[in-house]
Length: 155
Image (cartoon, rainbow, N blue to C red; front, side, top):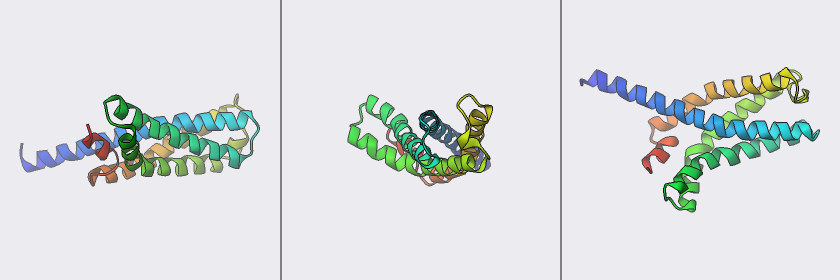
């Protein structure tokens, strides 16, 4: 393999790892976000309270999806928590900022009922846009040995 082929393989590997890290973040954030928005909407909470719950749950589920397999592989909980904080904080933060900003920008999204296409469509669009914006963040972190590269280095 010559230098050009090796460099191309590294870029593809970083892109693939960044895509997996971003999808991993989307799953955790998505579970927390959807659960928080559904609970807040069902209880008739204000937009601010609903978003606060959704963000809190997104961080809980996002970190949990990293911690759980690390602990299952034998890593101590404290060490797994430290790795999750290092690996996921930037990614979850960016994803939550973008996701919630999109939800706030879509007219009526935060006031839509749970049975509304607007409610579910807005969530889907917001999470999709958040993935696109978060991917380069994860790629940059992984390219510098940070983010999910830290977690993969612990295996």
